[in-house]
Length: 97
Image (cartoon, rainbow, N blue to C red; front, side, top):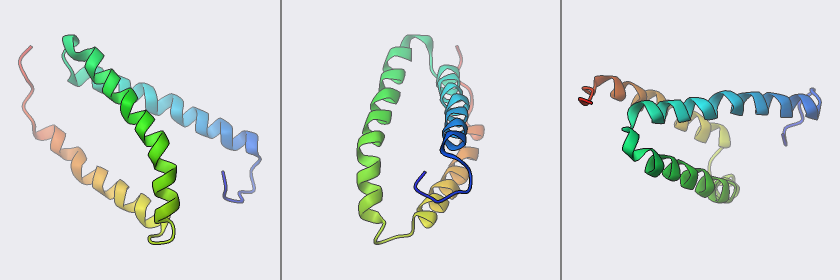
């Protein structure tokens, strides 16, 4: 939202809200699908902890690394790393229930 876009603030906030409305339930569904039912509490508590740590340290790390590395390179690197790691999940054999 710090970028001077030609769209109004309420449109940006609407798009951010819609994106979070798609991403967060998808993460919860993925975790529920790959985790056994007796470990839901632990897995979702770790998800909550990771959200909290990211919300605290993310702006700090981004502010300090802005002078060293371009934020576009960081975004590109994280995206490419996710695309490389994503196919690894499809090669695992499913655990018997």
